[in-house]
Image (tube, rainbow, N blue to C red; front, side, top):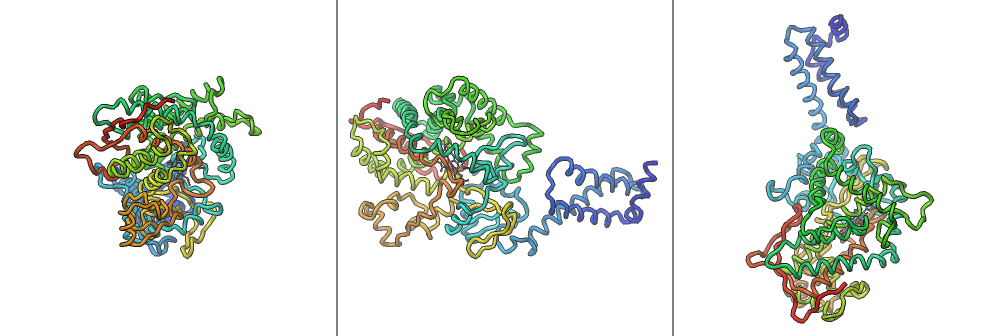
Amino acid sequence: MGSTVIMDFPGPLAEHPLAATVATAVVVYYVFKRYEPDMPLPLLGLLGVIPGALSAAFYYASSNGLLYTAATTYALYYTTIVACVLAYRVSPFHPLAQYPGPFLHKLSKFRMAWVLFARKEHLGVDITYFKKLHEKYGRYVRIGPNELSICDADAILPVLGAQGFPKGPFWDGRVPPGATRSLISERDPAEHLRRRKVWNRGFSQSALHAYEEIIRDRTVQFVQLLEKMEGSFDLDQWLSYYTFDFMGDMAFGGGFELMRHGDDHTGVIELMDGSFRRNNITAHVPYTLRYLNMLSRSAVTNKFAQFAAERVAIRRREGSVRKDLFHHLIDEDGLEPHPPPMNELMSDGLLAIVAGSDTTSHVMINAFYYLMQYPEMQKRLQAEIDAMFPPGTPPFDLVKQANLPFLNAVLNEAMRLQPPVPNGAQRSTQRIGSRMIGSHYIPDGTQVNINTYALQRDPTYFSPAANEFWPDRWLPEADRAPAFIEKIEKGGFVHDTTAFFPFSFGPAMCVGRPLAYMQMRMAMCAVLQRMTLSLPQGVRDIEDYRLAGRGVCPTLCAVREGSKPLVG
Ligand code: HEM
C-alpha cells in the first residue's frame, strides 16, 4: 500500500533521480536563503524528511538497494545545497561581492569562528590576524559571507553613533534559548535604552563617589599581597583575582574572595574562560548555540546562573550594606515604576562581573608589562605619583589621581595598543535596511565590526611609531621626552583621538568607563607608590601574550626604599 502511494507520487521524477534530487535541493536552497530557518522542526523537514521521501521513492522505482539509494540521494541533496550556498557567496551577484577578503571567509562564518577559537599557542592564529587582513585588503574587508571588518575612523559615527546600526546577531549566539538578555546582548534599541537607564544611574557621579571605599579596600588588600610575594610570581593571575573580587563586591556585594584564598577556588575564572571559548563559535554561527545547548547545557551557564540566583536572593532578603552597583541595578532607592525582575537582575549582575573584571585587568597587566619593559618610564611615573602623593601619604584621592597626566597617558597608550575588545562590537543593518558609510554601500543584512586593534595602530591616526608604546604622544608638546621628540622630528606627528575608542562609542558604548578608569588609576598609584616591578632575568618580550587568552606574566616586585605600608 505504502509503496504504491510513493511510486504513484514521484512519477517521472523517479525516472530521473539525479535531476529530481538536484532540482529539489535547489528549491530548498532558495527556502534557506529567503527564510533562514533555524528551528529544529523546519530543519528536520527540509534536511531530513525531504531527502528521506526522495530516497524512498527512488528505492521503490529502481532495483538498487535501500542503503545505496539513500546514501547517494542524501549525499547529492546536501552537496547541491552546500554548492548553491557557497557558489552564491563567492559569486558577483552577492551584495558584498565588491568587498575584498579571504576566500574562506566569504564562504562561511565557520572560518571566522575558527580564527577566534584557535589560540595562538597551538594553532598559529593571533590578535594581529585582522590587522594583517586590513593591511592586505584595505579599510573594508569581507570577513564573513555577510560581514565586514572596517578600519576607518570615519565609520565610527555612522555605525556606532546615535543614528547608527543596532547590535548584531553576534549576541544571539551568546544568549541560550529562553535565557534573559543582559544589557549588552539586548539588540532591540528601545529595550536597550530602557535597561541602560538603570545602569546609567549606577555610574552617575554620586554613585561613583560611593564606590571609592570599595575600590580602596580591595586595592590595599592587593598591594599588601604583592608585598608578601617572594621571587617570581604571575602578576596577571593576581590582577585577575583583584578585579574579580572587586567586581564581585560591586555586582553582588561580595562572594569570590580569590585574593584571600590565593586561588580560583570558586572556579569562576575557569568557567568564564570556558564560556568564552564556546562563545567564539556560537557568537559567530548563532544557530549552533541551540544545538550545542541541546547536547549539553554548559556547566558554565548552570554554575553562573546558580551563583547569581543565590546572590540576588541574599540581597533581596538582607538589603545592601554599601551603595554598590547592585544597589542601583536592584533599584533599592525605588526610582523605577516596577522593581527589576529577578531574571534581569541575574543576567545584569553576571554581566557586570564579566564585563568589568577581565577588561580592566587586561589593561592593567599590559600597562604594568610595558612599564617593566621600559623601566625608565616606570621611574617617570613613580616620580609623578610621588610628587602628588609623597611617601606616607595615602594615594587614594580620586580627583588627584585623575590629574596625573603621565598616568593617564600610560593607561591610554596601553589601551590603544592592547584594547580588551580588539575586534570591535558587532553592529548590523539587519533591522534597518541598507545604509551608506561615506561612499561605501552597506547592504541590508550586513554585519559590521570596526576593528579597534587595527584602527588604533594605524599610522594614519597615530604617528610616529604606531605599534610602539610611547605614552608621550598623549602629552602636551612641552612635556614630551626628548627621545620621542626626536622620533617626531624624523617621522612627523599625528594624534587623531577620534580613532581611539577602546570603550566603543555611542548609546551602547561601555557604561563602566568611569569606573574602569577609577580602578585602574587607583591600582597603578597604590602599587607604584609602594613597589617597583620588574621582569625576571631572561624575560624580556612576551609580545601579545595576553591577547591569545589568559597569559602568564612572570614578575618580580620590590618594596621601594622610603615608602610606607598602605593603610585602608
Ligand atoms: C578598561 C576597561 C573596559 C573596557 C576597555 C571596556 C570596553 C567595552 C566595550 C568595547 C563594550 C562594547 C560596547 C558596544 O557594544 O559598543 C563594553 C560594554 C559594556 N561594558 Fe565595558 N569595558 C571596560 C570596563 C567595564 C567595567 C569596569 C564595567 C562595569 C560593570 C563595564 C560594563 C560594561 C557594560 C554593562 C557594557 C554594555 C553596555 C551596553 O550595551 O549598553 N565595562 N565595554
